[in-house]
Image (tube, rainbow, N blue to C red):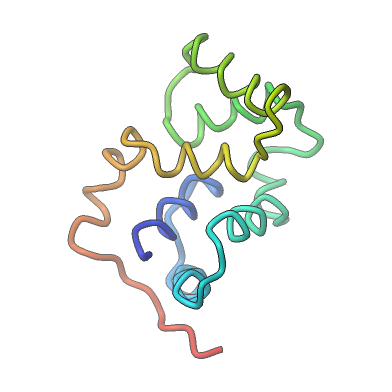
Length: 125
């Protein structure tokens, strides 16, 4: 769960995870909090709004994921797929975020950082 938490953290906030926050989210996942609930919490955060902006259209949201998670311009076929998933198939933004976060492309980008583990502060809550 540490890798999942780190990838989600860095994907949604477009920065490295801080030790305390990462420890908190690892603990939540270890307690059985579903990944989608964690993703929703990130999407509802003030830091998400300051990073991505507020009142994003579905197209803007997906475009920002390409920029901030995959660090590249969107490819039209993929972009169309994700926007349609939200608009036509009732896939939530949290599910889309998790798909980007757990994609092999994103995993390849962060493996150098988390391949030998990550530092975090054990949550005592």
